[in-house]
Amino acid sequence: MAVTREDVLHIAELARLGVDDARADELTKELSAILAHMEVLSQVDTAGVAPTVEIEGGGTPLRPDTGAPSLMEGTLESFAPSMRDGFFIVPRLATHEDSSESGA
Amino acid sequence: MSLENFAKLGAAAIASSVRSGEVSPSDVIRASFNRAREIGAGRDALNIFLHADEKASIEEADVMRTRVESASDAGVLAGVPVAIKDNIASLGLPTTCASKILEGYVSPFEATAISRLRASGAVIVAKTNMDEFAMGSSTENSAYGPTRNPHDVRRVPGGSSGGSAAAVAAGITPIALGSETGGSVRQPAAFCGVVGVKPTYGRVSRYGLVAFASSLDQIGVLGRTVDDAALALETIAGYDKMDSTSSGEDVPIYRLSALGKPAPGARDPEAEAIRIGRSPIPLPPPPSATTLNGIVIGKPKEYFPDSLDGSIRDLCERSLDRFRSMGATVRDISLPRSPLAIPVYYILAPAEASSNLARFDGVRYGLRVDPGKGLKAMYEATRSQGFGREVTRRILLGTYVLSAGYYDAYYRKAQAVRTLIADDFRSVFASGVNAIFTPTTPTPAFPVGAISDPYEMYLNDIFTVTANLAGVPAISIPVGRMRNLPVGGQIITAHFDEYTMFRVAYALEAALGAEAHQ
Image (cartoon, rainbow over the protein chains, first blue to last red):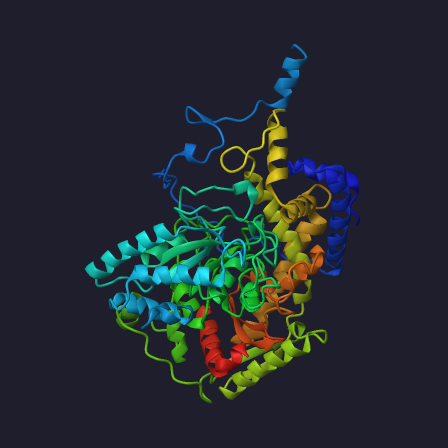
């Protein structure tokens, strides 16, 4: 099935990727062309076939729920874009900004 | 041993000379950097390295000298220089995945595979170029420019572990680490005329490997010879509590497979002495009519289509003849669902990637681009400017196939077909086939810039991607040349049977001799 421009803009928003107009047109064509090659799978009879969700079975192994010392060498500050008092600092949520702009 | 012909020395020979005191570790590391300069590994030529620190590596080698002098066990890789793909976390050198979004990022922890290499005496000399986040088959998708193939600088080295394959092909390091999701070690190994191994899923810890598609990812090894690759893999393989998907299966000494005998028990004292480098491996006998007695090699028709390039077919047939002359039986087999592997892979891998790469958001590490319009705008600006075109394309493709309305048609369908592809392999191995032989790639290295269509690029993985989907081990070794470019042959075995894979590979390498590079 062909991907529409609206699809591209929608999934770009879901993936938090800004896509400009020209790139959105390109991606619409590229993704449609790639997905056209996937159509062959719809012809395969998979009734009763269990999907692969893990390799070689065994389930997810669990370990005791106990803490362990951090293996990190160096500090968070050495690579974090912005930190204060041991917390990662992020920009304000846009909704908060909107309400302050409207004076609410 | 002289370091004058450094570019041709194997890892085992280097380590042995370091342990005996014949050469110093720091001289070996200098020889590696000298070779890198001589061959033009820098940004303006082959563009193999993204990060290297000669002074720090030599200092590390000097520490190794102290260890050699004070301990009876200096490790099986004492003083061996190793290059590491830039998506494997290392202390000291940056880990950028060849992406702008991780420019300058230095990991605060180290991958288990690297820790094990260092514990065995290896010295990390460089982080190598790659397709951004391992998404690509040519190393052209690096944010830091393409790597060139040392055999022909107008051509790509393959990818995504192109820098690691080129480092080994250029004689800078005898071994290198790469990573595989759909063929990213074997395809560049084939293009660069070296040996590349994708181990069984779970054989090597993924701790410290930056996640791309977690159900497929596996750290792999590249070596100039089968022996280099076997030595590297037995060093890094084995259970690791830091990776719940790593396996507790015993790791045999893969190098002993060269002798054509079954693997000795894991606790065998003679084997243990070899494992730690105290006893040398006995020399394997030359190939004979009985070398592969009892071994059944499967030749799957789907990997030898009518459209296959004639030269590649001829070189593979020559290898199959060598197998027969060493006593193996070559049997025609079928892996009927293999032609579905590329569509399956390019649904599952982007789907997993779209989830795994959500962590690159400008909050905790890496690039942050903040236009000053709130949190969401920061996410979008950071990711849009940080990720390249192919990574963006795959995140969107993955988001699409996982989104409401398409999940069952694409993602769930692909998971079911994956089961069928893996069933094909299980049936073949259950029928008495010990190893499957195929071409590694449908073509040799192509010119830089020659492939612009994304799906055409994806088809490079057509013969390699099935092993990742099925989780089985596979190796690519040089089997000859066409138009003066290297061609690789692939040997695939059952889950955790790397021993047989190496046994067949050692035998073919010895039987081909110099022909493997002609």
